[in-house]
Length: 313
Length: 128
Image (cartoon, rainbow over all chains, first blue to last red; front, top):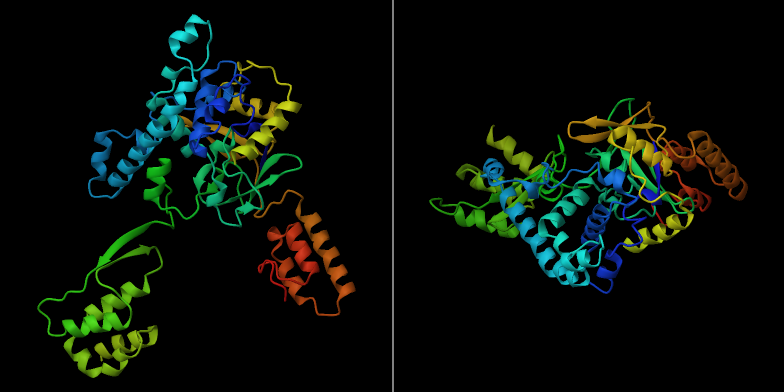
């Protein structure tokens, strides 16, 4: 469907005068943060090769839709969701990354006053603010493709860990309808159709096993009908006011089931442990005496089915 | 990854003759596609359209599932060739290969070599 040369994958072709290489040398800065610094430096350089692409990116003043940019009034809608906590943790991590990893590198940049005095248009310490870093981070995380998250079917042999640049950043992120491969000889990133695509249809790449909550917190987007969505269900055996409480607890123990336990429940799959726990919790006094044998055997689909049938006979 | 990309950068810069600062006239979706094309992207089958505040990449024509770089015909020929070679070196039945050939999009050089070794491509590295 599409192929792009390595030279159109950011951060190749960075400006000759980019200070980033010197800044990150011998530092422990992460890959994503390093790409963010390259992006900030290229945006600052009007002569950058990347200007046509960078001009198409949203600016800090635009609503750039990353969850990190949400205001308090936006977060009101997430009152009962753990998304609020996840976002706060994400924001705190990013601020720590800026403070601990980026700020120490700023010493390698000139101050604005020094740059002006020398008649230079270089990136200065004052240009690399936390807000600018968050902007760059949101651009990278919302627009890049991370082939490492994809299934083997969607990722063929050796591919870059991050694919970012013009055109490739305009794929919809959701349905894994595209395979990515890299031709090392021709130095091209190649995108092939995994599913039939009709003319005019939006092209889409996968997101890996990522739920909508993680997507929203990490990439600022949602995927309609995301099969990886999940809910957390906490099970706790009711051990009060029931003469069979001890028996229920013994059954749970014999089946290596602990209480309380939080289960991750995804669409179309119910954890066996949760099903079993719920069944043990719902056993009636009659079932305790009549189906002792069944209960003493390991819980399986057959024994659970037997008990369910017997209950309604 | 950075090293990987920077290695690409060195190669790209060496062969690259774009004019620094040439950033005008590439505004909007069409401009961006034209710029990408001028810099080596194969954009013949896709289109960039304005989608609200952003841009969306859409198909310019229909694509079949499993559209491969080298085309189905070449893959079929390669599988046919492998089948002949296999028949030549082995007297075992080739039903397995016929079954595997139905799953063409999965075929690549590695799978082909595994066919020659009479291995199931789905079981990487595990000889029968």
